Image (cartoon, rainbow, N blue to C red; front, side):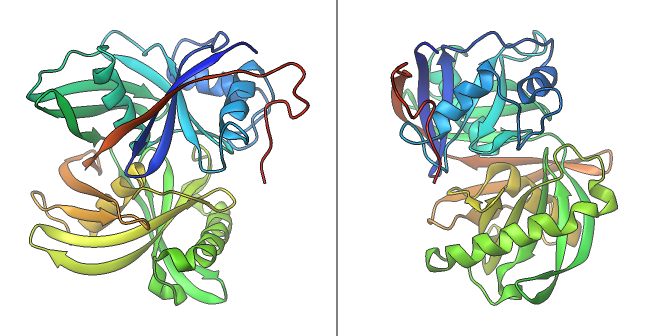
Length: 336
């Protein structure tokens, strides 16, 4: 493995590592096909078969070069000339079909690098092909600087309401929505919890249980990678613009999203709209467990789903060249 070059961003506290050079060839004609090849025949999104591309993912997510919360994307060609760029999303445990905070970071990166022209004052639209479809990142600019990015997701639909489960000994009902990946939502109070840093261990344990419990639900049968994330939320007093919630999103075996979760926010928007709690023109303020914020809106119905937009800030944190010394006995790294 040679040098791997990355540009790192964070969106509302959640890291995103963009690989810009040093990738082995990524075969396939579309982003979805490239993802399937990256996972490998016989592998899965959370247990990809080893290969040159996955060696890079492991190098960048494992210590000592990464950490358990690291996520990022391999920049690949778009599916056609209508989009500016394609991306394969990855994280510590494998590959995902959707990543809202990563889409925000990619939008900022595309403008910062000049891949997409943008005015000093105004907006620029970056069209990105991701495994779940084509998404948009509207980059907001003022005085020559990027001030925010609005992520327009693929259409988001409610999958099921009030699925009964037992979690941490509590009977609860969860809601399922597909926002490019499948998410389960439930109020933290139903488990006697609140979304605060002091309860993260309990929230992570609850997320693991919820993620495993509805695996056999009919709406998830054959659904991409099953249930991708679990959103535990607190209801907060409404703002003048609309609902206000604080959430933590839990993935895999307890990985915590530091941001309010971009695609998870889309899932919450679809559920709130289905409840009648979020009318067009109203805004959800969605806070994270570390106090950062995304805002979200429902724009239009589309074929039984809704189009959502989520806005947040993305900031560059560094540029890196990673190497793997052939004498390094730790190889691509380790996870604790």
